[in-house]
Length: 390
Image (cartoon, rainbow, N blue to C red; front, side, top):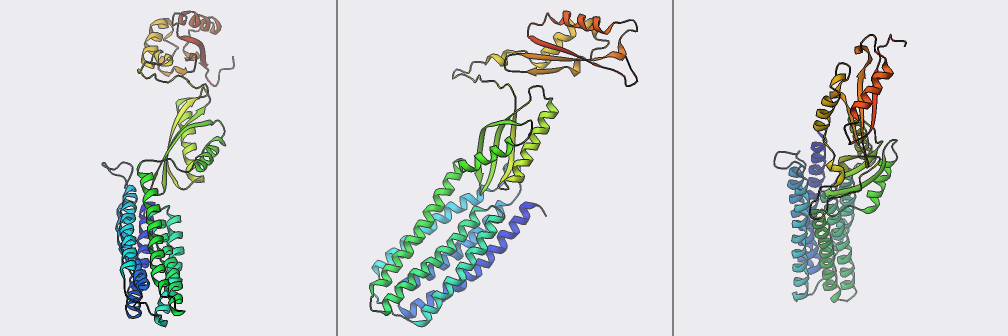
């Protein structure tokens, strides 16, 4: 079972458990509110049933969101959670407005009943337990949708506290307390819903995650040897998970394979230290970075006007045609630095003529390559057989 499938199973299990209790508590409070003529208690029951509706959406959204990437969704389906969270928030805003309207329009006087009190106390205890259970699971799999659903359960518990206070007010002769409690319930639902919508919309427009988290991620990368000055960090959130792009500096003469190794090391270290980061794309910059950027007219920067590898190798084959017997032109190493193009030629000493002088041959190579004006620095790297003691 993949990690996404494990997360999907956790989300389904937790949501199903919450849905069962929401159905039981919602029906219980509505019946108790009807016989108590308590609009606040009925409203609180509707709130619990609205939790049941959101549980259904969360259940199916979690199933779809935890599917792996495919051809049409190369980044996966996690944004399904985000869109669902926005939709749930809009539904809850409508529920909050309806509850507030009904409480102001209601003409019946609430009555205090002990079974109504018992239903509220049971709701407070059970919903608080569901809150902690769901929130822990949401944090475990980094699911904003589950965490939002957990807070939805917490809001149900808080609204039940408000209704409880209202019923106590009715018991002591303050009939208006029930209406006030209903309005408090509506405000709690509305505030929670608007917060859900705002956070999800911020994610949909690719707002950056918490700057403090980005700073910690840069510190993690910077702690590695031969990895310097992490910069140009860009991040986007998807259902609580973070996709990251960043640039790092590596030693200027590092090979392509070494640069790739350091990039993979940075990616692994960040994902290990920050589990909410699920993907890291690392761009490798030489230690001597290029400061030039494209102008608004799209003019080509000076460093990009240097010849590309295929052109350099073609020039070297022509200029060093007298040395091709012992020079491996295809293995030439090019270092594009901020103010120079350095060339490292790879030569095999075992292929030299028997009477050849290594120092003179090397000097001849240097003289021949001077015709390439872009070669600011040239090194000849000779390889020697293991049994060569000279």
